[in-house]
Amino acid sequence: MSTATYAGVPVEVNDEGFFVDPNQWTRDIAVELAKADGIDELTAQHWTVLDFMRKEYFEKGTGPTVRVLGKTSGVSVKDLYLLFPKGPAKMAARIAGIPKPKGCI
Amino acid sequence: MAATGKRHIVILGGGTGGTLTANRLLRHFKHHRAGSDEVQITVVDRDDHHMYQPGLLFVPFGLAQHSEIVRSRHAQLHDGIEFIESGIDRVDHTNDTVYLENGRELAYDVLVIATGAQLAFDETEGLTGRGWNEKVFTFYDITGATGLETALAEFPGGNLVVNVVDMPIKCPVAPLEFCFLADWYFTERGIRDKVQITYATPLDGAFTKPVASATLSALLEEKGIHLITEFNTGEVVCDDDGNKLVGYDGREVPFDLAVVIPLHSGADYVGRSEGLGDELNFVPTDKATLQTLAKPNIFAIGDATNVPASKAGSVTHFEGEVLVENIIRFVEGRELDSTFDGHANCFIETGFGKALLIDFNYETEPVTGHFPAAVGMPLLKESRMNHLGKLMFQWVYWHALLQGRDIPGIGADMPKAGKHIPTKKEEAIV
Image 1 (spheres, chains in turn red, purple):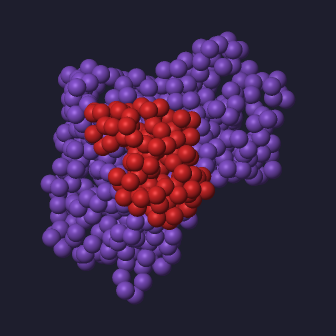
Image 2: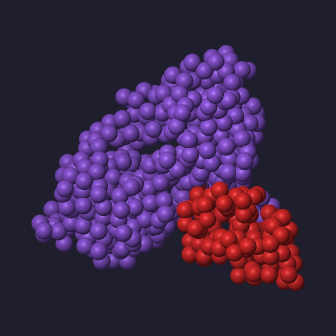
Image 3: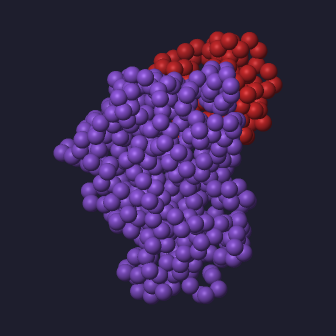
């Protein structure tokens, strides 16, 4: 665990860069995290996914898998990969400031 | 209350969870309470074939036959439990009624959802297209497992790819076991040097939990099995140019023989029942009490739920104790018991007559040590004893687990004695 500073705000993140406390997240932070991950501009569709990830996290305690995201976010799995090329579930979770999806076992 | 004047407990599904719940409930109302005839227990299933699902892993390798792993469902239910063989159309929870496909309507006081998970083949493009059951199989149903027995016996060598489409799946260690057994099988056939075995998983390691993932990754490497992580299968292609799995991210994995574990979903009727299931037809359920979020008089057990535990028979067995206690409390108007801890206990067959054992719950990941106490079966370590334990379990399944008996020394709560549980500091490092 370590502290990183995004958009001028110090936040606690784990070794893989996932937020420890999702309440420390802001939309400005997301813009900065996205840039660092190679997404120059967050489009409306990106925001749809990010907002959905946070809503799911606060309702269910974990972010959704790619399939569930494809079924419920209003964005198809193929499009999700275009939006978040490094893997939607993990990449979007990191930018949305929620812990890594558990991928229930 | 149902028309007969008795309380009616309806259990949907006559598999592991439905059967052990029915038998445990009957025993309680028969032996621990006066006036046992006040309760009617009904189990509904679409067929009368109860499959010992862990046995499916062994069929492709010629180590088990179809006839050995299937028995009658109704024969596992104790006298006094009604069995109805019919598909389920839908549940109307507003009116506490189940509509069956045979036209019957069942009014219930308490409903238990125990219809498990099913394979959603159609969710993966091309999976059941050209090459299906010729070059592309699953071993998660009997048709596929039987077909694979021939395919493996005739396999001349080449790329064998084992692929999990997405989590959650039943018995999440089974695909790894398939890889380990394939390594053993082709060694025995004398062609191991001609077979490349690849395991392609959507996870970022061999398994979800860090300590077990590291141990299992090391075993894969030791056995020469190639691991591809974070692979989300978008399409299965078999054509004149060759066969390949294509990931959503564009990565391609060529194969000569593919063993694919499809996406899982809950039963179809859950989707037809308003307010009962989630987007994949799993039933949102309180992970500690096993009461559904749909309505207080509906409970759920096993693979059908969305609780964050393994979809495995051992979990269902441990859930059974808490579930039955809570159904009794609910009927008596008492507060529910919130003690299900997510306990899972799985043997992992590693080939050459050995197996690992893992034991864990919601909070404690699989670690090394011994089970159930300091003297016992080795955890996360290959041993012959664990392999024998795995083989013996089929007997335990039919004769103790389904009958609703407790298994000596193995309770619903996960034991901590004997486990090397990482300290908080060590956890922070992994």
